[in-house]
Image 1 (cartoon, one colour):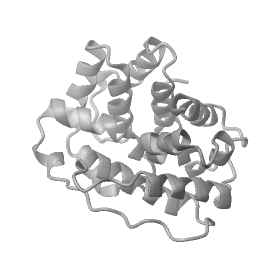
Image 2 (cartoon, one colour; image 1 turned 45 degrees about the vertical axis):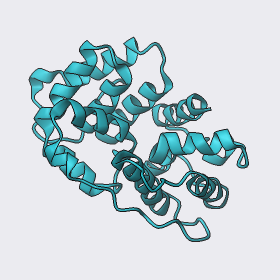
Image 3 (cartoon, helix red, strand yellow; image 1 turned 90 degrees about the vertical axis):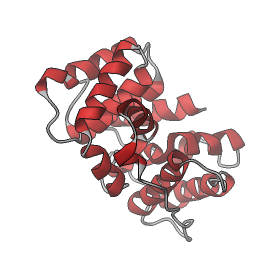
Image 4 (cartoon, helix red, strand yellow; image 1 turned 90 degrees about the horizontal axis):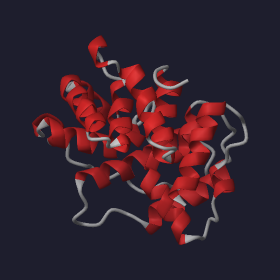
Length: 220
């Protein structure tokens, strides 16, 4: 299910068509579908951020709201889980303005790790939160990661060397938005390589398509 939705988002971002509708990809009452929304987070609404499809505020809002209600972060949730949940709420408010009803409250995740994590751990967390690399979503997170461009660059190289294509794609997606990325990193070529080597991984395709559509970098 996660792969199916990721494929649908990636195709919409790659093709620029107007056929994408989140509610058309999913059975709204299916637990697996709701879980897939929570796994992919704000990216399920990425095509609407670019105006590539007309948001179906009612049906789409209903299915996202059900996913948020069905899978809220628990009392002991990690910062990554809290950021992901908050990002999906923010994206829903921004990209589904016609959806009826109230959205859940946005949790307040910790951000000390953005300043204190060693670079390998920072890169890992950044890759887990790559779905939040959308315009107007999680600005504090984006600013914190932008301040550590060098560490993200090191994480990108490490992920490629380890053949961890999903982590490389997620970190690379953040780097397309970061300042002062060194030309020596070869980010654009690197993202092309990551997508090709991932053997069609739908989530890698989603991240690299988003990097190109939102930042003009990566595979074409």
